[in-house]
Image (cartoon, rainbow, N blue to C red; front, side, top):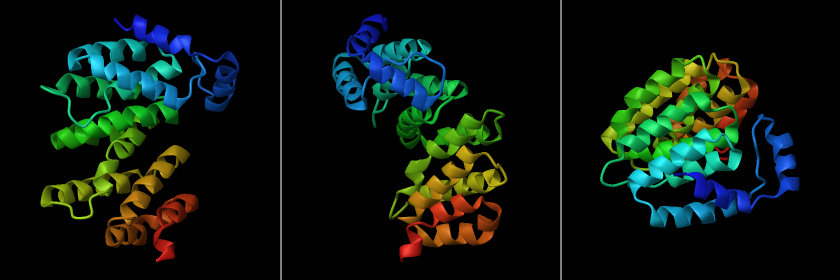
Length: 227
């Protein structure tokens, strides 16, 4: 079912740019050379013509192609606040992509789709919590990138505040992980939180900052240093 959509992506390919992208992203896969706005335009049109069940099938096929732009398009097909009548299959598909993550760009697009499904059903945080102990670095990272919405509420409800504290616990558990991408994700989560909840961010850094890599602690405090 995905083949016509993959062909639409391929028709916009740019061989020269594809080689540049391969060099930049360093992951060994096919690149078509599309720009993000081109993928956005296509997936916007596709979403308007496909129901949720069809979108899931197309997204699955595009992802399995392992083509860079196809994986981005798969994620964008499912990046929507509401997927009616039921988004369970969409969440299962997105969560199932985690073991395939091998680069930040693809992982971030998939995690954006995951963010929508998590905010639609926060009980899924129970599953995400298991990711922080994964042997796969990109899955551990996804636990933080997928939960970024819980950094953003200015006036969180009690359940949102409980989730925020819970995820801060995961973040603390990942501090001993010396992988650069994990430290960067910790810094990202805390930096975003600092814009909306400075006291919790400062408390975290006071407790865990000395154990973080210096660049990550500095990045986490970037906006707080200005206040």
